[in-house]
Image (cartoon, rainbow, N blue to C red; front, side):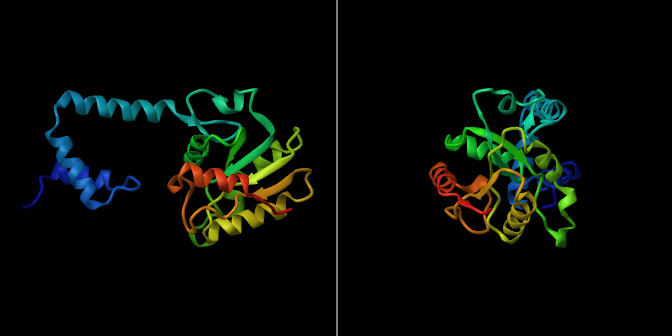
Length: 198
């Protein structure tokens, strides 16, 4: 049976979301097409509201409604430690673990020449600008795949000699996986067992 065009369009739109495969997109589209109009309007309004109000923190790059974000504005957090992550969602994973009490810095990805991502495409210059303001340690919390390793080694070399110790999360994280797939215990152990790269 062929689906009506509006549902096919909805399936295609939902299929572009991360973690949503073709079958999940179809199930969601069929569910939404049969849901009360008011509930669908509320969902659409929530999506638009989130997209219009959420932006990147000008200091760390985290998702926020206010600038600077709550983490950067919190004087109780240790400004001597900056944990470098690939994406804003990685901050949520580390915060759930509850073991890091410093500041964050979102790179916006990882070096990947095959995908056209070079060092100048990332927020590395912004990270360098944050050094010197009492920062004693940079913790690299990047994924353990080839691009994550290459980015970590590039950052360790580029930031060496700038006054801060450079460390990386221990390899307690699954190889080839991102922070969002790790549980709190694994993240906590990985952070506590980080090793010096400088």
